[in-house]
Image: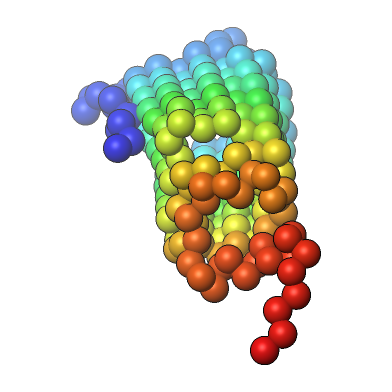
Length: 210
């Protein structure tokens, strides 16, 4: 069970996020809508106890960000650098993460719902508890990740890269895993349909002739 963000019922409205962040690095208990933070650069941005809707962060450089108790809806994180960031009790709904860099990031009770995540880079990240629901994650990079509780539900994982990631306990039966990249030793404990299991037959050097 994913813990939900603890966002207060009463929030201050923040107008002009870019101007605000020129003199601050922390956004707390705010409602932010219909804003643009494009091509912006800031280390260790903090957003907490807030709602963010219809905001573009595209092409920004935001390493080591810290987001806790935040709901993001219809936001664009395409080509954003968020490496070595921390997300705690965060929900992303209908967001874009095309080519987003999340290398070495820590995820604790994080939900991605109905999000477009083509080519997202999640290598070397740590998932304490996370769920991906109805997400397009084609060509996602998920190499060398560790997790305690992670769920993929009805996700497109075609051509995604799970190399050096133990898939023990992962239930991928509802997902498209065509062309997935992994190593045979990482497959132990993965849960698949009989049809999906044929995807990995070639890794075993087996040829099936009917």
